[in-house]
Length: 227
Image (cartoon, rainbow, N blue to C red; front, side, top):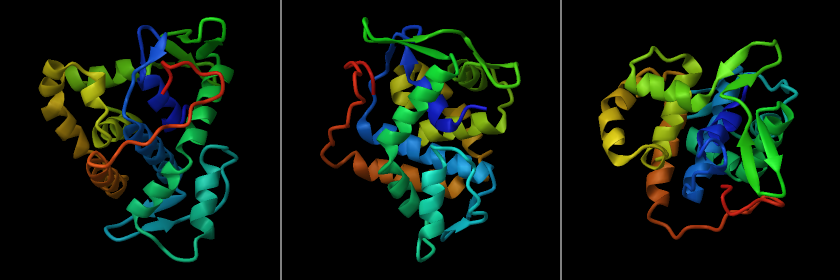
């Protein structure tokens, strides 16, 4: 199973995987942070209510992307709300991004060609450990939005994350985005696990759009087409 951070990076690939879509730094950081928290929620490590994010199980998952954030939550001296933990997880966003990219390369989904400074998507279906294949995240989302395919729970999360962080305005042409809005809103109503996390991300993102942009750290050897 791919983690949400990995799927977010794949969602941003364009031109058959030759480069990444340029998105605001704020959008990328909070999409990755939200993805980490949503994976922890789906692994029954955390839960949320209207006022706080709750640690359910501090047992590490053996996952280098999720365990550092889980440890932060477990080591906290007091219970905090979802917004606090979204912002804390966003502080690790560049490490999360780099780890997600390395995993995609190790899985054989992406190939890094240093001589051309390109990321190459090797297949429209992703190989996974059990030998089955997972359809590319972008294709799954387009089917949900425009063909009214019933979304799987993880597709609901990805759509909600993309919406909360304003990614759809970058991913879709304006006309298609307007067409998809009613469907996006419907899918948002399906998200019960991460409603407070998504609300926190939406609030942070809207406020952050009014602030001066920050300069993202760039991974070693990456080209200008990478996020």
